[in-house]
Image 1 (tube, rainbow, N blue to C red):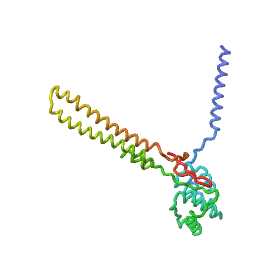
Image 2 (cartoon, rainbow, N blue to C red):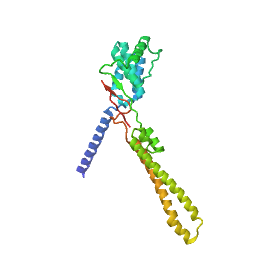
Image 3 (tube, rainbow, N blue to C red):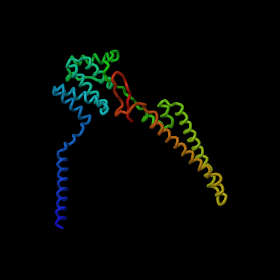
Image 4 (spheres, rainbow, N blue to C red):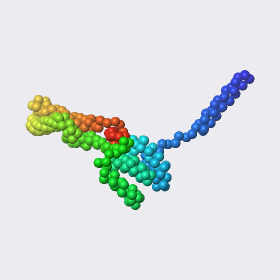
Length: 272
């Protein structure tokens, strides 16, 4: 019994020691800092620029552009513009021009506030803006191209008139087939409904076995045909809307917004 007691005490001390080591390791482990979001990164860049900490602002801007996928187009415009102003102030007009062109490729109507930008920088920007179509950029400039997804607009069109959305996307043959099929089933369903109402009026004037026989042989078939035709028209509508939504999107790589840059060229990226 005495040995068992000493063994139990030893096991107990060992367990407590292991728990203490685990607790110490957990406390010693540094707490992971949350990754700043795009809005916070942009705020840091602009705050550093406003505080005349140009080196820090430039470093943050380049780091942000390395992870451009996480930023919205308007945020990228502000990053490129801030970086361009820093580079121009440093005397690197070529790189500053490239950054202004990148911003203008996202926002062609971009303007600078003359109260916040020096007259020389403003004049440089206006020259770049005026000549950016004719003037080739350097080999490292980032260019953006907007990618429009027509599927949302095509979806509601096909929900209203099946095939309209397909024609809107350029799928003319498919669109007319769907429109024709929908129109045919809808027209046939309407005709069947009118015939059903006519026969039902006649049925209301009959009695007994004659009425029952008339219902089964004349009224009921038109009633069922009307239902199937209207179901068919609804099915064509559902198919056309689903097809407009799920097919025919931009055949490009995945991104987090509808524009994307490349070095020395143009590459379209899109995330649905």
